[in-house]
Length: 267
Ligand code: DGL
Image 1 (cartoon, rainbow, N blue to C red):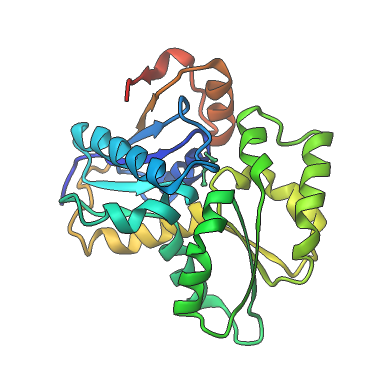
Image 2 (cartoon, protein in one colour):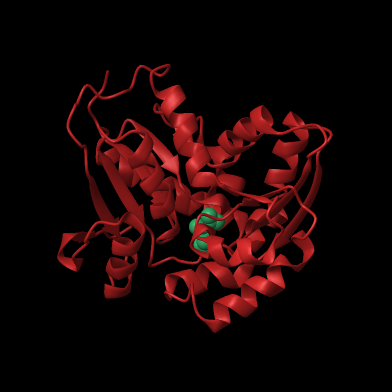
C-alpha cells in the first residue's frame, strides 16, 4: 500500500483523456497532472528533444512525490519510454504496451487489420508497428500521421466544419480496418467524428481506457495501491497557463476547473 499520488503528463490537454479514465478505474488514487503547454506540440520534435523533455517532466513529478509516472502521451511513449524507464526507482508506464496487450486478449484471428493514427514523431518511430508485430505477428497494420489534430484539439476545434473535413480526410485510408488505435491522446476528442466516417464494425481504441484498465490490474502487483477510501482528486500543473485549457479541462473531466486552480510550473 502506498498513499502517494500517481503522476500523469502530456504536452497539453490530451493526457486529461487518460486522467479521466484513470479516475474511473482507480478513483481513490490521488493524481498530479502536468500539461507541458509551453513546449506543445511534441509531435514534430526530434527524438533527442523528446527524451530531454520527458526526463524533465518525470523529475518534476518525482519531486512532487509520485509513486508511479504515467506517460499519457503517445509521442513521448514512442520515443522516450525505453530510454527513461530504467533511469528512475519508480514504475514509468506509457500507452503503447498496455493497449497492445489488452488488444491481444480480445482480438480474433480473422479480425486483425489494425489502423494506427498518431503524430508524425510517433509514426516515424514505428513503435506501434514494433509492439503489435511482437504480440500479434499475424496482424496487418496501416498507419498514418495526423499532425493537425492535436493542435486543433488545443484550440478547441473538435466539433466544427474544419474538424469534420480534417477527420474525413484522415479517415480515408482506414475504411477497412477492424480496430483503429488512437495513438495520440488528444484524438479521443474527435472520436464521434471518426466513428461517423468508419463502418460500424470498426472499433476505435482509446489508449486512455486501455492504460487505465491495465494499471488497475498491475497496481496491486507493484504493491502501490492506496488505502484511501475517499475520492482521491487531482492537482493540475501547466508550464503555460491559459483560459482555453481550463475550459477544455472542464469539458473533458466533467468537473468545473477554474483557472485559479491551475498551478504554473517552470521547467
Ligand atoms: N498528446 C500527444 C500524443 O499523445 C501529443 C500531441 C503533441 O504534442 O503533438 O502524442
